[in-house]
Length: 233
Image 1 (cartoon, rainbow, N blue to C red):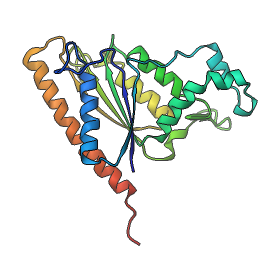
Image 2 (image 1 turned 120 degrees about the vertical axis):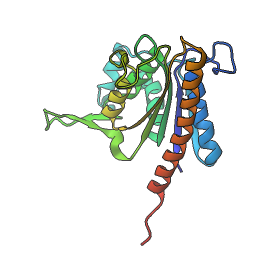
Image 3 (image 1 turned 60 degrees about the horizontal axis):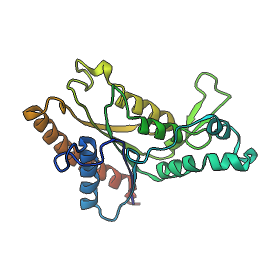
Image 4 (image 1 turned 180 degrees about the vertical axis):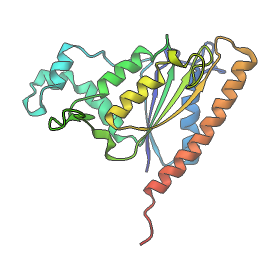
């Protein structure tokens, strides 16, 4: 059965439309997961609120430990990597990664960047093939099809690909690069725009995004069902 890993990265704890100053990205990610479970209650979900409980920022000890081969690690190194190991285990187990993330100052929230730094791990999610110096990196999460769903919210408008502000959007492109580096290349994007504008423009964007979420849930469930259904002999 498919397993979902649901991350929320917004600093706002509430849901837009329900709570004062609520988060639009959380509203989208909750809609995705609730619609998924409404259709497939048997599928499991791991939830991590990194917006309210950010992962640790990597430091010198983390770098030293992660680049030391596992058999040679000292006890303090294993302790240093314990949080990272938990986060990587959650990601490895997931068939669908659902990320709710607002656009903060043209990029991802610091908590989400901290999560990325914790899960891009030598020997766990990416390896190095020294025999191929021109393209040495081996994505270890390409072992099976995994999907990533990026559900974002932006204060301004025109940040979609081809839009007048697209060159200033470093949220989705950064995530797509980092996830692809470790082997997650099936990426789906839905965004709400116009939060700072409000009014009818925002309401229309929210309605369109919610409709797109529902359609994407159905699409991915069909794809995963076909993937897990053996062909007749």
